[in-house]
Length: 121
Image (cartoon, rainbow, N blue to C red; front, side, top):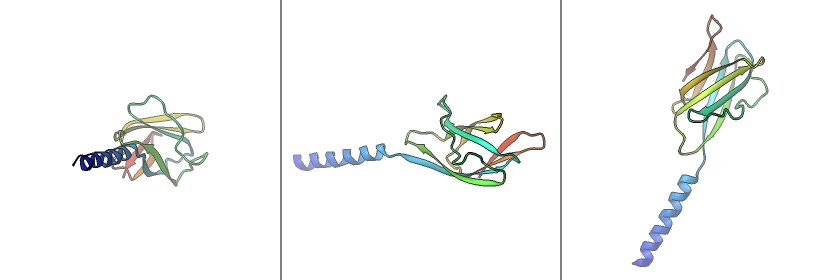
């Protein structure tokens, strides 16, 4: 009986450890309908003060194009993220508390006053 209990405990510990050690990715598309070429999109969870690396796989993100991006996360990551978008003159706009849990497509747009905004699909 002790051997069975020990074996059960060992197997349970193995699966629990591997389950929590897994790394995941958030994958989604970003569509640029701003009328501008963008030169950087940075994403961080709302609890982090560092923007990290540009998530766009190219040097320039042209208007009327789409890119597929992946953001590494762990099982402790929440749904709320902040996004910083920069143009070639390093002008930038930030959006806070964007819900990434249901995100499939993030469409970037510009209104008639020149303000960037987004739609989550």
